[in-house]
View 1 (cartoon, rainbow, N blue to C red):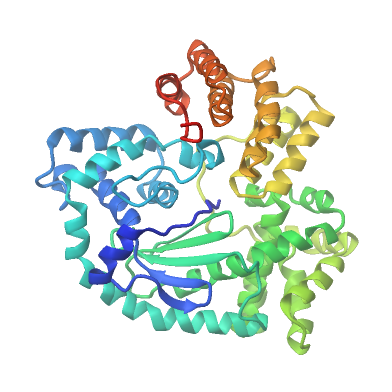
View 2: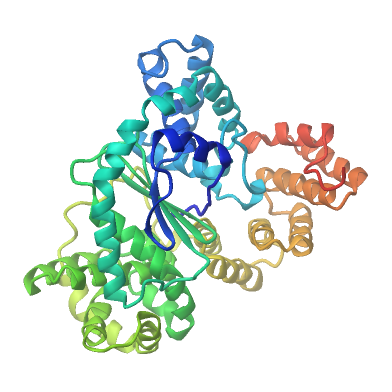
Length: 490
C-alpha cells in the first residue's frame, strides 16, 4: 500500500527558484511543492497513453513514442490508467533527480510494484532529454505556482486542526518528513500517498475541491503510523480478532491480513469523525460501514476518543492506554451481536478473481502472501514474524520465506544476514526461478560491495544459467558480469 521515499536535489531546487515555490513550509516537517521527477514521469505516461496526440509527443521521436506506448501496455495488463499512475508515482519518487533518474537505493530494497517497472528508467532518461522536459517544466511554472497558492492555506489549516486534536505539533517519529506535491498531469481529483522509510509523499492531482479530507487522511497516517506500530504489542489476541472477519463477504481482504493496517485505519476513521464533530446518526452510519468492511476497532476507538478529548494527555500516551484496553471478549461479543446485521457496503471493488473455497486454501501459501503484503506495506516487524512462522510451522527451507527474510535484512542494511538468507534461498528446492535468479544477482551485488569480484562473477553466471528474466533479470546479470556493482572497491 505504501512506498516510502525521500527526495532532494540541486537541479529541482535550481529550476523551481524561477518556476514554482519549492519547499513551501506548512509545518516543521511538512512541505508543499512540486517535483520535476513526478512531472517527468507524468509527462511520459501522458505520451504512453495518448501517443503523438499528447502535447508532449507532438514533436517527439516516433520510435520513442512507440516504445513508451509498448512498455506501458505490456506492464499495464487489465488495470486502470489511474491505478497505473499510482504505481509509476512510486517509481518516480524512488529515483534521483533528472537527468540521471536512477534508483536511490539498492533494487532489493524497493517494493515489488516498483521493481516490476524499474526498467522504465532507461526510457525515462531518453524521454527527459528528447522531450526537453527542463524547458517544459519552466514554462508551466506559473500554473503550478497558482495551484500551490490556492492549496497552501487549506492544507495549513487542516494540518493545524489535526495537530491541535492530537495535542502536539510533532507526534510521530522526529525523523519523519512529509512532502505534499501538486501534479497537474495527475488524474483529476486524485490523491496518492507513498511512503518510504521515514518519509511520506502525497501526490495531489488537479481538483476544484482540493480533496482536503484525503490530504488530512494521509497526514494522520504520517503522524500515527509509528505510534500504532509501537503500540501493537500491547494489544492481545490479534490473530483471533482478525479471524473474526476472515472469509466474510464484503470485507476488504487487506484488513484480514495486516493487523497494523486494520488498526491504524480504524483509528483514523474514528478520529476523522471526532474532528468533524459528526452528528450521532451520521457517525453511526460511517462507523457501521467501516466496521462491515473489516475495520473492527473503529467502534472501540470512537468511544475511547471521547475520554481522550475530555482529558489533557498527549496522543502518544493516550494510545498506549487505548491499545492496552482492547478486549478480545468485548470485540467478539460486539461482532456476534452486530456484524451480520449491517448491510454490505453499497460500493464494493469489482474483482475478476474467483476465491477458492475455504477448504482448498493452502494455509502456508496464504501466510506467505500475507507476509509479502506486509513487506510491501513497510510493516517490517509483521513481515518478519510471518516469514519466520512459515519456516517454523510449515517448511524450514521454504524459498519464498527465506527470500523475504533476505530482503528484510537488506532493507535493514544487515549485509551479513541478507547474504545468509539469499544463499539459503538459492539452495531451496521450493524457490521458484524468479526468486533464485534475483537471489544470485543480489549475492553478486553483495560480493562486489565486499570487493570479492571473482565470487561476484560466479553469482552473476549462476543467474544467467537460471535463465529466468523476471523484471529484466538477465540484463541485470549481464551488467554485473561486465561491470562491478557500486563503486566501493575502485
